[in-house]
Image (cartoon, rainbow, N blue to C red):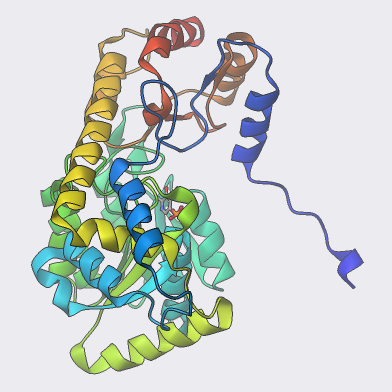
Length: 386
Ligand SMILES: Cc1ncc(COP(=O)(O)O)c(C=O)c1O
């Protein structure tokens, strides 16, 4: 039976990563892969993370399973970091990365009777796959004008009129991947009103806290929306904020009426149990140690500040460039690791083939992966195609 399986096409990003690896040019520029790189092009381990790991090595006494919910102290600390004063309203479970949290959330929605999930486009390419894997139907909604690099609130809100009560909508909390375009606080409030009026459930995806304007600033919109929503689902990834991508650290938070909390928790536990049983410990333990210790927490905040400052500087350098038809100045106003340039496939291919500049087929660039030394060559390459 297995021999009848039809092959699936690989993730398009993997193709670009392979092409980059096989390109013999020494001055090639990688803006495809979605990880932060420092000025030397490395993705280093944060000092606070190294210190927390040393502490764990010295003090950990057992490797027995963590509980079904995961590391409860980790969940409390992350809950505080994300929600502040409204953290006590959440039911939480540790997850296998932000991706795992998104899947848990989709499975929970399906168990609750939801059928469809609205995805403002363009979205993170894994969102539709996760929604479908949970046997929910993804529904596209227009959201962003790439040529003008602006969020189109009118289009988005009017697309919501086609949604039905009980449908969910996935919204990225900050540092949008792949657009770098975030809602303003007033847009978040407008969205909250529109979702409440139609009985839609906000499903927030927070994967870049601290990469935009600051740890608290980046979740101001999320908090405003969640405070106004009777029910909400929030998937959190700590891969980027702590630079611990491969440790697979995430959490799912659910806001629901107090009387529903026990059912929410037991459903989440049952979904997790049938998937991977118990979550992995190490990455969550690192985050717990860093957030619980004043000195480690400060060290982490300082390093995150440096990362953010570095990304903002790269954005400013790009914004100062004059590239014919491209609105480069708008890129500086965007947030986080990514932006999407208004380039067509032929232009993206020419950049790759003739200039050794790699980005996704949809022209997403990892601003956070661009070395300062490469900016002039990148800008020259853009000028040659746009
Ligand atoms: C928007 C968004 N959500 C969720 C994730 C998931 O992160 P992870 O599963 O690595 O924790 C990512 C990672 O790239 C992302 O960009």
